[in-house]
Image: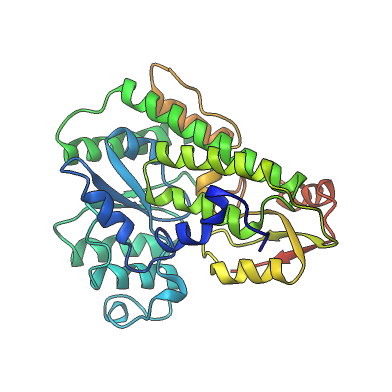
Length: 338
């Protein structure tokens, strides 16, 4: 890993171990301990409309399973043993009490297993609020925007019922502004890594970004701003490393140790598709609109990245990927195939 600099960058590994890299999820329990209004909604990968959750006053917590940190002992009695590890280990975490801090869970329609897990969840945790969000499969359809808006309205209505009061446009617009600022800083982090990979490593970037799934987004924005300041001030000389791109990890997230190993092997990883949900929109969402849910729906259809769970007819992902690799002057690509 790149030599650590001052303050935030010096404690990135500690940040990871007390947030997303902790199989006990103690950070969520600590958040709940802040008071009766500190409530948490679990969000399944790849993407959940967190602005709606945030506007309703809940902490959107990113639950991507337990990875290599969890042994499956109970989940296989409730769900097929051959399905993806994210679903099995997420269910294992819940069955062993690791996710007791969650007031509810949102499952997006990323795959059939996620669809089935939402039903398994309802059966095993009948006291927990659960929502399933259907994404339009044909994003070029003239009906896609109305369909997605209806889904967002249904999700907002469920959160209104859970919190016990209506959710207004002012709250939604305020949350959109919060998330726009956060994504701006994430874009700056990635831009800095592309231009000066000696100043900010892959594992550092990943840890900093993923920590946002375990703290209020306003606090995460402050963390990112400090990290950017530290990175730009870091006195690091470019090294004769191989310039590469990491692609394919759209849902399953690799262990932090693997990312560190890539860097220790002498690679500058200039770009990746890790944590797509944190970087979902390629440009800011419209703020201050009369119908912020409609603005969210329009953004999903018009400025989301084409990926394994979102493919628009006529979009040449292969050509765009090749162009990106060439623009970065990369020497090679790591493909992390599912």
